[in-house]
Amino acid sequence: MKFPQAVRALLALLLCTLSCTLPAQGLDAALQAIQTNPKAPLSSLSVLAIYDGKPVYVAHFGHRRMGATAPDPSTATDSKTLYRMASVSKLVTTLGAMRLVDAGRLDLDADVGKYLGFKVRNPSFPEVPITTRMLLSHTASLRDGAGYVFGLDVALQDVLSPQGKQFGAGAAWAARSATADLSPGRYFQYSNLSFGVVGTVLEAITGERFDVYMQRTVLQPLGVRGAYTPEGLQQDDVDHLAALYRKGQDGAWNSAGPWVAQTDDWQGKLPPARAGLAAYVPGTNATGFGPQGGLRISVAGLGVMVQMLLNDGVLNVPASWKKQAHAPVRFLSAAAVAALQHTEWRYTPESPNGDTLGGQVYAWGLGMQRFTDTREAGPDGKARGDRLVAEGGVSGWGHAGLAYGLQSLFFYDPVKRIGLVYALGGSGVDPALHPGQFSGFKQWEEQIMAAVYQYANANAKTPP
Image (cartoon, rainbow, N blue to C red; front, top):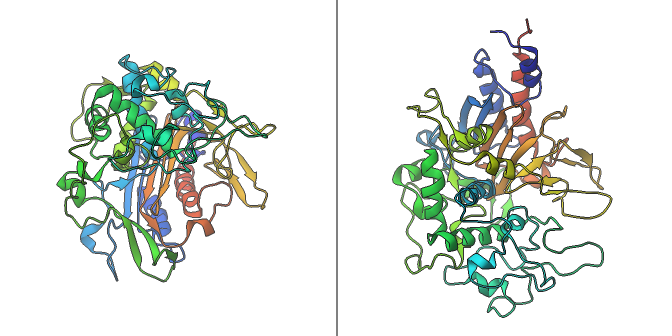
């Protein structure tokens, strides 16, 4: 099979990945070597690549549960393996918000107090309304200093309002600064709490609990298994759920120690319902339902979302990828997808207008990072940046995740129509001590992306 010059160029950039002639065994071996590296093992790893809007490679390595001495072979990762995808959940939450925008029920630029039923203002900037656009772009001046997950019996109003019982010193809000304009809409500060507020807005509009709304309007229409809360999982989901791990004990990393589950180690048993769930009133506090990081989903499920975004909001999954093909379905309007991919904030080094998270974030849209292909050295001389390939030349949109040992990535380029999704269930060494060589990603994440690049480039055909 021969490729035109344009396709050959894409293959040389990493994420266009594998043609139907590419021997997957070579990439399988490279990824398995990364997963089993004795110096930095990963408990599990799932990788999916998309080229020309279609999935062309998917593979799974390691085990979703690690035993005390050795993993049980019956728990090997596979196509059904679900991971708690951490902050990639925010991107999917944003899809739920845009469904309401398309339905004319949510105005991105309206004061969110209109939906929540109480005044939402940063006390330091009382004249500036907080909007959903600000929340989705992390420019609402909210901070995680007061926490970002609260009990079901706590009203979010009590956290956000100065008269609230849990307002305290106002740590949920940015204060005025003499060195930067921190007013809402101006300054980027990554905030988990912002997405708890978004989830609560969605509840207030629909009258549904956030996790139930997301099941009904996002996961089910896309034909994707998963849930935002443990209670939402079915038995088959629990049977294939990856526990998330770190190596060590008592909170200390120890690469020679045992794998210690951090979350989702349900041992095949359905999670019990939390206390207070039946009494919860939607629209009061959705933080406990995971809008900021609770989504359990497979890489294939996220791959369906990549395909939908690459098709400007149309879901058109081929029979080769799912057991049954279906007619194209409009999931989001093209205008909604364009809004997601509009740069709401971009870092300006000449004047401080945001926190780059140590040089990992340089631009943001709605619920998604814009990967700008930036590579630079930090003050300590170590590499940082949002570059995906050492050689450069790959940019696009998506979101990374990091929590409880898991690391994940959802990436796509709408121009080149390429994408990559991966999830790893835990590392055997402290990620902070194993930074990447050319970016803010970790060592093994760069290796995963480099493996896809190497084998795609090596198997590119000479154009006619």
